[in-house]
Length: 241
Image (cartoon, rainbow, N blue to C red; front, top):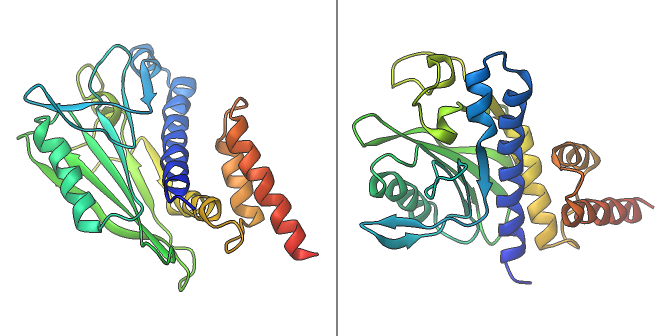
């Protein structure tokens, strides 16, 4: 089977999780200015990252403000790519755009065994540099219990800090501030296991708990993803008979 199926599903689910977090801010904030900004954040399936006017790369998924040609938040999935290669790519997104890209979240699957997946979070700094906020944290391993942990995000990761109250902006290194939104390793693990199942449905099953987590993420019009989850449920039930 073409490895792109699992790769694409991993990026799509992660994009849906992040978008859900942004929509929660829209629904819960009492700050009208914050709500207005959050309402303009959109997910982009394919975006062109240009360096000196020339096309450099196209990330797996990204977020930007409505009407903005360049993304601010990038999702990279490494399915068969080496960890170092995808980390170099993440650093180049920030370096090449001089900090226009605020955050790159990387999900790396240890291919071809698919027994482990790790998450990394790279953030831009105020001097056009970057720092690894999290690096190679295990979100799933066939040889370990489900790891605890979260990836902490801020609204500024999706749109830049301009016009936002400090509480919604990622702080500089050494400054403590609670994240505005979090994505748990449990959810990221479920996303990985769904992608792994899609790649090799006869080898890997999707457990009920993962099915429930993923179902809660999906918009009502996500027919293709809902069909995938229903197929996974039927296969699991058949195996249990």
